[in-house]
Image 1 (cartoon, rainbow, N blue to C red):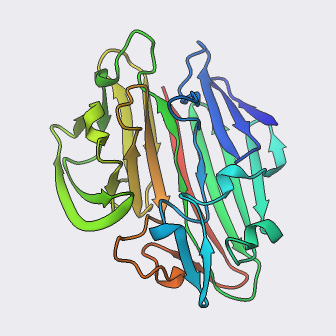
Image 2 (image 1 turned 90 degrees about the vertical axis):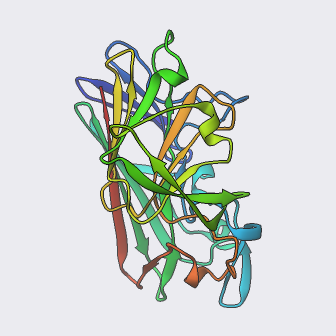
Image 3 (image 1 turned 135 degrees about the vertical axis):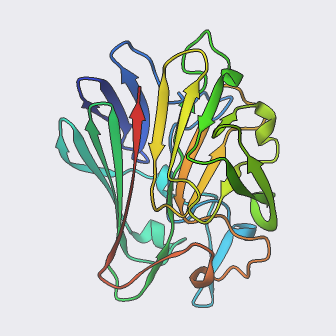
Length: 288
């Protein structure tokens, strides 16, 4: 099942399965979101919950019990309930149940609200702890954007525009974080895209380095800007060898370190939510 949000500038389509953004089209019919080509990458913009990234050996330990979770958690593969729908906003909700507790032993309500205003799409997240103990969780966004946006352009016609010229990148080993870092030095705040940039997996930014980034074309005026102030982690990714899309990913949570002991309560970047309390985060996308 799908729902649409419509403004004077954009038409947004959302899948109830995974509460996933699956289309953003402007009035000229230009599609900004990657269309989940199965032989390349069969997703559009998956929601990451209750973990972000990969767990070491695909499990965590909580209160001396082992639980297994796949990369990025289970929310992206579950049906959400939709409610509070208006022409320009909709809220999706996922509640804990017997199925989720097999792999994640907490009571929660996870809500995602999409708000469309002109050319801007705001995404708001809320995790409510409905239990009488601390809830440990992570969340993140993984939107994939057509790159190139226009059919006559190429992947390498595009660049990412940041707010500064220098960043520290965490190196990964089989999807897990290492102690090694590299320096990413830009020219005039621009990072021109090349497929080989992603040969060793995602570019991972820790320590709240990214507040805003724009995907821009050197051959047309189309641009996508993602604003994510106060998100502690960020990822840039595309599939190795791909020249059709790129993902810009704000995260409240991060993959395990390769030396982790798998204890969920001590996981790097984990969010701790007290009983009866909630956690909120938001980011926005501007399409032009």
